[in-house]
Image (cartoon, rainbow, N blue to C red; front, side):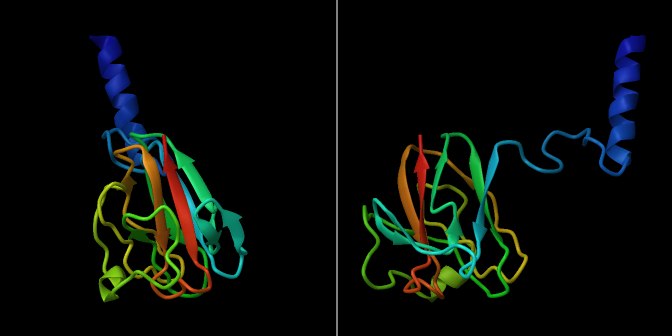
Length: 153
């Protein structure tokens, strides 16, 4: 019993200490989250199997099913990351409507968008729930070409 009390006390103290490990499961950063950087000027266009990609780093993000991703806007301009449904290649013209500016969805296999992420903003967590290749792009800069791929294995 004394060992259990000592362990519980240590966990509680850590959760109250700046930089300590949270005692409550799920509080704090989520394990297994891959971050995709959004920055149109820093991430130059490159060729991918789906076409020309740019503005996101990495251009192709490979993740395990069961993990998660989030997008971080390190640019000084607003951007989105929005799913491009049902396509193995990037469409020639923008496939997005104004709804891409509103955050939606939380699973890679469904329709999702980060909504408009201002400079320095971070998106919602998107769960990698099914294997496949998923394309996405920016509502504002799709033609730049601001596009990327997520490969879920």
